[in-house]
Image (cartoon, rainbow, N blue to C red):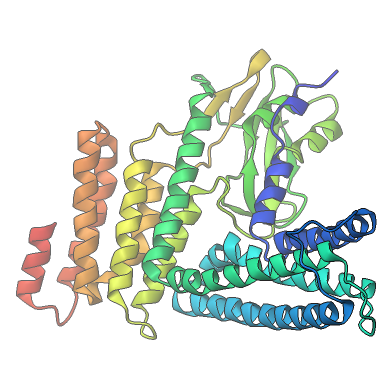
Length: 431
């Protein structure tokens, strides 16, 4: 009989799937294994095939040996070139945009498929060569040779795509657009999950002295928290408080959760918690909405640095921050206290609130914007748009935080030396 926790989605499986997607090694390796399996399959098929069908290529072993050797040499050389282009794109993205956007280039499916296909074609040809006798005029295995030629044509076609694709991905507009799109998907996913949660209206966030505190088993970023599994990990009538949040960095030995009353078997609860909270070596966007803001702000700050000096990129990053905030400020926030079955309660006091998202989106950009009136104007326009947006959706509780950002920026502009009075008047008019 399955326990309650076993019926909930596995956060570990989701974490592994996410890491697989962001690995430049995993998918190409799977494709290479496919090439090895294809070489074995075609070898067995050639030994058991009857008269060769007309659509199969027919040549003697000497020609086939030369052909497969040439294909193997060309594909492994081209794979080296594609690797070099990928590394160059990563270096450019890291230096021009932000080190945190490298993950967006690494996870590119097309690049992974091209690298895997090139190496798989090489491996296929190398494994097929022992079946050929280069000094003999006997016919070569027709299916093996035909598959090698088909793989080569497919590889050549796919090689043409990454060059254009890579050039487009290095365009900063495409980068910030994709980051914002992924951030919007995370916002929608978190909001959809929160819609099924039952708020606990009379929950007390204060912890009694005799409560049980369980600590983090390692250092890293909290990338996933499964509320259902947390509630299933504790006995009935128990309250569990999450002492961290998704997107936070947690240290070894730092409090992870607090539980009261103390369960009869703390070790069993600790084992179940390992399947409810995932701590990763690097920050991810699986459930971390704030990481989208962090990446966009980093791009804007890097663009405004003296080494880059690209205010237009900072403006585009600011506009994308505004797009994300339009969604964040209108979705229903997750309840800080969640009621579970049989009197269980989950407390999440450290979740970010909309005011903190506003600060994370604008604080750093606002502090460097006074030296760039173009960027300051963009921030003021976005803030004005957000004010109108929350009024339209009936969320006036967000107005003080938005107006505070506007006031702080205007005060900074008034104290900026060298700013022409007409520029200052124009920026105040925009606000």
